[in-house]
Image 1: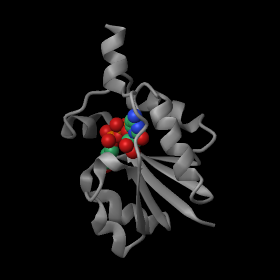
Image 2: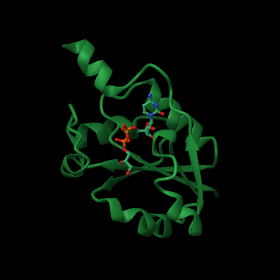
Image 3: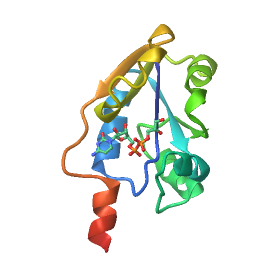
Length: 127
Ligand code: C2G
């Protein structure tokens, strides 16, 4: 069984997120998502519209997602890779290069982002 790991805030879930999750899952059999907690979002200088528990419930309803774990800090990735037996770490290309240090523990794949959609643009349109 090939385990995939990714991380994100996944606020106001949209097709950019879903297509990332779809492509990540297609690389293996079991997809673990590290979901940024509200507190970690502050560290990321990112506020989410929906609280962690709702973002988690929504992600768990996505057919590509097998497990959601909390992302509470930048430093947890290596231990998460080991704890969950991760074969491939996947994230959007906006992070290209940032997580190359994981290459000694697992494969690292940066996927293209879906164009013309983002949580911040949705929030802007909502007014
Ligand atoms: N994404 C995408 N296309 C978009 C928007 C987002 O492919 N139009 C991808 C991002 O590249 C990321 C995932 O969807 O891989 C989740 O996006 P965010 O919730 O914005 O994640 P981010 O805040 O970048 O958190 O430790 C890593 C961070 O927690 C990543």
